[in-house]
Amino acid sequence: MAAGPGVTRLEHAFREEWGAVVATLARRFGDLQAAEDAAAEAFAAAAATWPETGVPPNPGGWLTVTAWRKAIDAHRAAGRAAAVDPQLLSDVTAAEEATMPDLLGDDRLGLIFACCHPALALEVRIALTLRYVAGLTTKEIAAAFLVPEPTLAQRLVRAKRKIRESGIHFEVPAAARLTERLAGVRTVVYLVFNEGFAATGGDQLIRGELCEEAIWLARLLHSLLPADSETAGLLALLLLHHSRAAARTDSAGKPVPLAEQDRSRWDAVLIAEGTSVLDEALARRSPGTYQLQAAIAALHAAAPSFDDTDWPQIALLYGSLARLDPSPVVAVNRSVAVGMADGPLAGLAVLEPVLASGALDGYSPLHAAHAALLEKAGYPERARGAWAKAAETSAVPALRDELFRRHENS
Amino acid sequence: MKYALLIYSPATAEEYAAAATAGRQAAQGTGPWTDYTQAAKDAGVLLGAEQLTHIETATSVRFAGEDRLITDGPFMETKEHLLGFYLIDVPDLDAALDWARRMPVHDGQTVEVRAAMTGMAWQRVLG
Image (cartoon, rainbow over all chains, first blue to last red; front, side, top):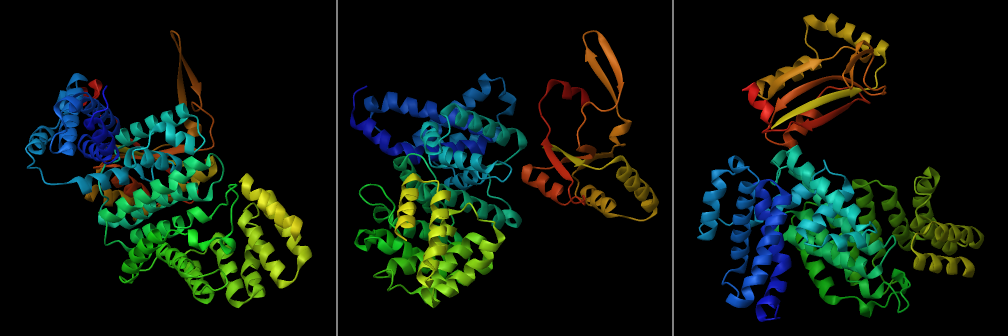
C-alpha cells in the first residue's frame, strides 16, 4: 500500500478514534469482543479505501458508522438477528445522518467503568483499561507487565466473556455506587502510573510509556468528569510526579534520589499544568488523598533545593494524609518529612510503630528511610544494618546497587 | 437478567442443625432472613429461594456408561457447603451484587453470584 496522506491521517486518528469506536459499540451491543471485531473491520476498510477516495470530512463518524453496520451484520450472520435491538438500527441511521445526540462522553465513561469493574481481578482491570481505553496492543501490555502474550490474550478473552455473560453493563454507575466505583477507576489509573514510575522490574523504556498512558487516562477521566476534585487531584499528582522523570535517573540509568536531583531538568510545563489543575481542585474544598499527595508533590516542585523545601508544610500534609489513609506506606513517607521538619528523632518516632508491626519488612523504602534517619541522628552502626536491609529487599537492580553503595559508604 | 445468589458456608453438621432449630423456633416472629426475603419480594426481584438440608443428607447419582450409581453423600467432599440460594431478576451485575451484599449471612460465609444463561433452546419449554 502506498504511503499517501490518507495513511498518515489514519495513523494519527487511530488511537483516539479506535477507543471512541470501541466505546460506542461496546455500550450499544453490550459486547466488547463484538465491538473490537467491528472496529478492526472498519479500520481495515478505512486503510483500504481512504488512500484512494481521500479521508472523509468526519473520519470518526465514518469509522463509527462503518463499524456499527459491521457489528449488526456480524450479529445477523451469527443467527442472532433476534438479538439486534431495533433501536440499534434506528440509532445507526441517526448516527449516519449526524442527528444522534452526542453521547461519546457517556460511552467512554461507560467503557472505563466496565473495564474497571470490581467483579474483575485487579490485574485484569489494568489490562482491559490499557487495551480498550488507552488502545495499547496486547503485545505492548504483555511486555510492560512481563506476562507472555498468549497468557495476557487469554486473560482478556476470559474477561470479555465475563463482562458479557455476567451482566456488567457499559454504563456510568448509579449515584449510590458512583463514589466507590470512581475510586476504583482512579486506583487502576494510579497503578498503571506506579508500575511505570516505581519500575518493580522489566524493560525501563516500556515502563516509562506506562506513565504516559496513565497520564493520558487521567486526562481523559478529568475531561469527562471535570467537577470531580479527586480525579483532578489524580491528574495533578501524575503530572507533578512525571515532571521529575528526566532527573530521576542518571546517564547510566541509576536512580537519583530527590535530594540529589538536578532540578533544572524538571519539566516546567508539566509542573505548571499540574499545579494549575491542583489549585482549581483545591478551591472546591473537597479534599482527598490524591489532592493531598499532589499538594505535597507541588511543594517539592516549587522548592529551589531539597534543604530549602517547605518541610513543615509537607509534614502537615502528610499528617492529614495519614488520617485519611492510615497505611504504613504513608507513615514511611511521613517519617521522612517529619525528619526534615522537626529533626531525625521526630522522624524515627513516626517510623517506630511501622518497624514494630513488621508489616512492611520486605518494603525497601522503609529500610532506606530508617537508615537515612539513623544516620542523621548519629547512629552509624544501626544505619549500616538498615542500609543493608534496604538493599536486600529492593527488587530493582539499579536501585539495589545504589543502596549497597550506601551500605558500603555508611 | 436472572442471577442465582448461592450461599456457601463452612458450617459443620452440628452448627447447621443448631441454626435450623433456631430458625424453626423463631418461625413465629421475624428474623433477618424474613426481612431480607420480604424486601426482595417487595422490590419485585424475587423469583425463588430455597434453603437446603445439610450436605451429609445428600445422595448422588453417578453416571458411568449405562450405569446409574446411587451413592450416599455429596458429589465432592469440600469444606464449603451450599446452604441455599435465591433466584432474582435484576437489570445488571451491579444490582445483583447489591442484593448479595444485603444478605444477613454470618462472618466467614460467602455468597457467590452467578448470572443465568439466556436464549437457550431448552428454556422455551418453560414458556
